[in-house]
Amino acid sequence: MKSYYLLLLFTLTIAFSSCLGGKKIDKHKKVTAQNMVETSPVFNKIFTGFMLFDPETGDTLAMQYADKYMTPASLTKIYTLYTCTKILSDSVPSLRYVIQGDDLIFWGTGDPTFAHPFFESEFGENRAVEFLKSWKGNLYYAPQYNKYRFGAGWSWDDFNGYYATELSTFPIYSNFIRFRKYKGNAEPNTVPKYFEQFLNQQNEVSQPTRNEMDNTVNYPFYEKETAYSRDIPFKVSNEVILELLEEATAKNIQFYWTLNAEMKAKQRTIYSYRTKDILQKMMHSSDNFIAEQLLFVCASEKGLPVQTKNIIQFSKDNLLQNMPDKPIWRDGSGISRYNMFTPRSMVYILENLYQNIDTTTLFDIFPTGGETGTIKKWYAGNPSYVFAKTGTLSNNHCLSGYVRTNSGKVLIFTFMNNHYVGSSSTYKKEMQRVLEWIRDNH
Image 1 (cartoon, one colour):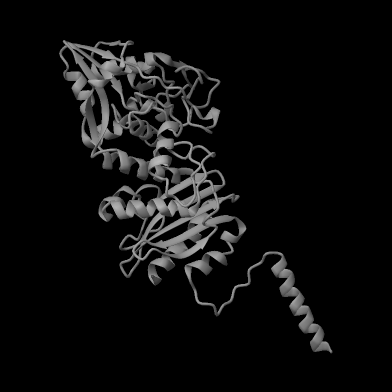
Image 2 (cartoon, one colour):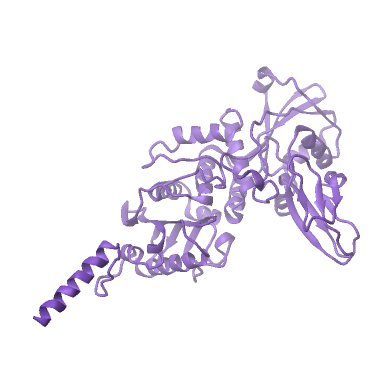
């Protein structure tokens, strides 16, 4: 009778555990990526979507919540990357222009690299800047209409954040005020110099901050030996763009307000840097500014009004129509929490990229584990085995890309970790554990 009660107690304990949603780990069960994720005590505390896919055989090797919509954060840039590879040529268009006698009338495409400090230092001066500098006649800038300064779903109070530059049909100097206080100098300066007139020393502030609706930068008192730097997005306006164009080109430039369809029909184009180099910078640095502006460039290339929603709709209708799940896609960078994608839709895009871009180029564009970009401190291997994009917002961290196994296979994976509390490092460690196992066992 005692044995009967002990058996009954054991059975009830197991049943109660099952009712609570607990997963009993079978120590004798064969280890797979599927059961590693399913039984993970780390992933079981949150909402983790996962999928592992073999692009050569078309087999799905593991999946959890693969059809559930989740917040992607900067995985959104993979959608932007995909759209760019389908629309843009080898180099990014920077300027459209027409010539009337001695007059050059020009307007922007949304190209993020015009007078951009990084690209100038890495690859030399933008060809569009050189072109305007070399023009011997009159220069006229034709502003293009831009309805929204921020993307859909962006936080209104992020205007001082380096990650939330305003959208612009003619971005210039990466749409930043580079505030610099050098050791030994009594006063700070700015790049571009145009913004120095708006510096305002105030003891009430602890760090440089810009007024929301103008370009006044309030900064605290600094001792002469203090060095300080900060990048602050500037407030975009037609007047500001014109002033910055004059500074970048050392030319007198005037507005041209009567650009018409007949003139646009005769437009010519100046190209800037290689598309691959710009995409690599976007993906390695998770650069929101470049991502947003590249969607503007794509809209310009398709002859659409230069607005984010127009090119996203074009991409959904013409490039992503066969996705397993319709994406809820609202911006180019992933700042917006309106974005929602499923893990299997992420795999769909990654597979398309893999099938249409040579592996060397593709893996150069994506960050490399232990070496470059946002995964420089994670997923290291010799040889490198993870090539992937991160996506991080408060309480969400994702990772999607490619894993190269010891047997030479390339597999596609996506992790979408949503709604955790605490540090993302816990989930990075667990993803690394799973990815290392995949590398060593496939």
